[in-house]
Image (cartoon, rainbow, N blue to C red):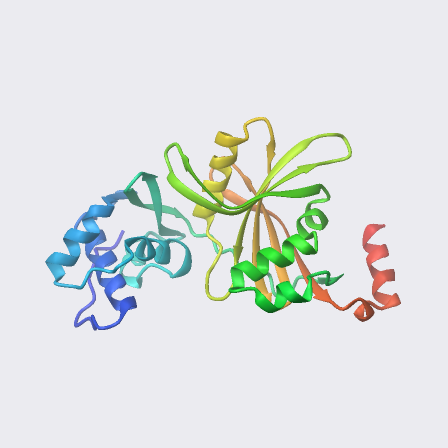
Length: 276
């Protein structure tokens, strides 16, 4: 494992650079070579800002959210990870966190996967007034019943943006929770994480969703789902399953929402061949 070397001559004028400097300092002040964890607390952000004479971000949660789900940790931190692993930030309780080494996993839509066209049932007024990519994606999933199509289970939206506390994880938020039932009467819970724009799906969030389901819905079969915009009307859906060592991608499908007239007889015949 490499020794930590901080960057030199940082530009502290932008928010991204402030975030970078704070997270680097927190990491390097606690990092011990050959250790797999680096614990810290929310209060450490305040203390580190004072030490570096950096204006404290108004929203401390945004700094943590940024490096957990939106932006990669600084390269100077990632260089300390051994080959095949990466540092991620986990919540370990209220106001408590840790950098932890995990197997390097990228949840990126496969560019070589075939697309399936689905007639777009999104109400025009919803598409017009959706406020952000995540909201638009959740709406398209809901109105086009893409979770049903992807999983083969009849699903119903239970709650959007579920915030709750889970043992060993602290407070978490799940973008949407679906409850489903199949033809044999089996009941399912589908936690969904949706990402658009520059945000990226995170294994950490998927782990939290699975832990939430075990805690809140212990009698239901949990099937964790990730959704990602590839293009405006092209959506990648992932299903994840836990293994002994990690969270793995169990399946991935791409759905393109199109006007009904854009589905040709040839394409429908092709989909029938897939069924066979």
